[in-house]
Amino acid sequence: MRSGGRGAPRDLLVVESPTAALTLRRWVGEACDVLATGGHLLDLPARREGIDLARGFEPTWELVRGKGRILSDLKRAARRAGMVLLATDPDREGEAIAWQLSAELSAEGGSHRIQRVLLGELTPEAIQRAMANPAQIDRARAEAQLARRVVDRLIGFRLSARLAAALRPGLTAGRVQAAALRLAGAWRPPGEGEAGPGALVPIPPPPYQTSTLLQDAARRLGFRPGKAMALARRLHEGVELDDGERVGLLTYPRTGSTWISPEVAQVVGALVRARHGPVALAPGPGQPTSPACRGVHGALRPSRLDWPPERVREALHEVGGRDLARLYALAWERLLGSRMTPEAWRGLGWDGEGGRSRRGTTSGLDDAALLQVLQLRGVGRPSTLASIGESLESRGYLARSAGALQVTPLGGRVLCWLDRTIPHALDADFTARFEDRLDEVEAGRLHWRTAVAETWAPLERVLGQAVA
Image 1 (cartoon, rainbow, N blue to C red):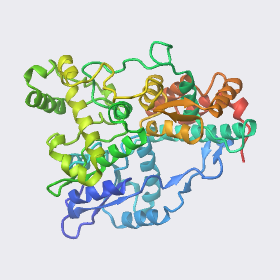
Image 2 (cartoon, rainbow, N blue to C red):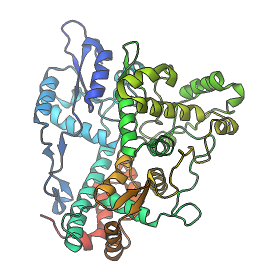
Image 3 (cartoon, rainbow, N blue to C red):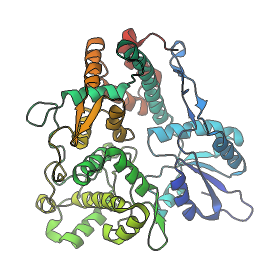
């Protein structure tokens, strides 16, 4: 970031969330303007497929309805800015948004002024570090998201058309929903079949990633995944605390990583000693620090370790109600648990699966069990896990009864159709193989069009007919 001396042009910092922009404006001072995109500005067409197979799966991008003014404001701000810093979310989807934005804004003064900023947490220290060390947009990571978007559009449009023609007009489904419905249909309680989840979390457990936070929020707090993710996102983007400071209390909530830095592990160890006594601290350095464990960003954890739950409880109650404070306390307890001995961890009431169930929780397929089996089989990604079950419910394929999720008669008909029509695709193994291909694209070892072609090939016979 520029120093912002008199007469120097102000830099432009672009984020996705308007709430995050509000938080960041308090820290960047007079040297930088902060604007938000509100998510994607460009997307595939809303009412047609928008993928040209004859041109190598070339997508057609259109301005999202209602985003014209936002894009105009961004272009106007970019023209007068010194540097343009793209701080969209630190994942593949955010990288793809940054890539598209770079193409749109580079005409406003040259691409050499556009840089990428990765913000895994919204604290003053983190934003200073990130803006002092900008990078270039990771095109391979953006192309991994492009491959996902193209495949999911092809499957979603064409599978929905086939379903509607075969079973009932208006039925829809997609790649992830089909795999998740098959897993739900095969699910059995632990001990009754191989589809049921087992004990995923060792003792002591690693810090949270998205899937494990959503599972524990369901088990311990009774939160539906969509609610838990909305609360986590709010804690990440910033809340007003007692002293008037606005700060993000959680790191980026969409993550598949459980990595924490050695510096954070050291602070957590000191907190364990102070709060639970020296005998509660596990020996050794804590979580592994190999690059393979880190992902694009680290674990889902409290970002301000000087703000324990009891210090912010009243403030969180005022701005978001009791549930906001409860979720924050859950993340705090799990982070400390990652540095505790097994005995101390169990002494807090946690079981071998990493959570303790609420009284009355069903033994059937509930939100936590569905999330756990999705995690086991590699279905979904951090940004979609919270909505998978709700998506199946909204389609009428799953129904909720006494806390349990059950496949409906309509869902059963869809499963029978999938098994008869596409017996060896659109299941968990198919999805896991596709995720492997996306990893190869992100690593620069596989072209995104090749990944799409390899994934589309087994579906082409059934779903290959073009959809208007």
